[in-house]
Image (cartoon, rainbow, N blue to C red; front, side, top):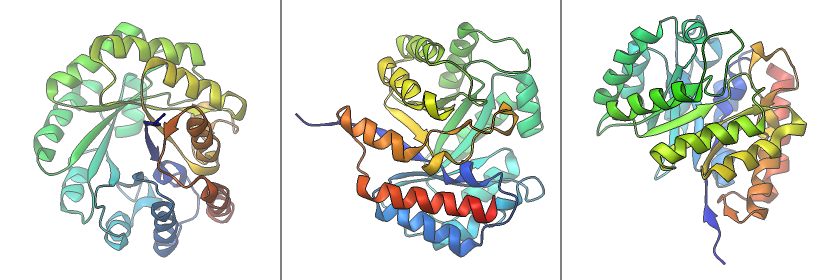
Length: 287
């Protein structure tokens, strides 16, 4: 029986952005090229944000320019404002931009320095500016709750999803930004969204403790969503989760599990241990 295709996004940008020391551009490029050689087709690899706030990503244009042409692969960069969008539109080899849109007012201000009310017009501008030029992914963060006491409900998630769809956003990834949502809530939220909007163009970006990784993966699969994201060695995650063990879903565990469950990832599984070791080495050197 043929395996079911699944979209898996490797997220070195998420892994690297909090490192305390700058990874030389050539090291970033060498690692990204190894990912491409291993068959990864979807990379969240940099961001166009102020070097004042995220110095690790100051070389975004140089990294993209040094990579082979995407040729059907996805090269995504995060943008947080109009200036970042301008840079992205001018960048070589970029195929997609991602915008972090939070259901939490508190986190939206912390993350993008603007309110939710001010963020909606920016999303509309991104839809217009990228049409026919770049793909647009909106990351709906705090989609499974938040640690700030801001209001949260499944209905609020569905309302935001509906508004994003009305604006013309076709690709939306729901994010468990601080990594403590239980698998059951993840399943319930995703099932609710799928029931109203269908699974097409819907993803899940989750953070987890090591013991909760596969349970959360199973929650996503049970909902009908076929787009997952993670990072080798589980590097990255959420600094305000208050738990050093909370990180990105570790790719070297997730992909073999998906293949065993009958999903086609397109990645050479034999390459994963070495790549995870390289990801861990970069964290040791620069984290």
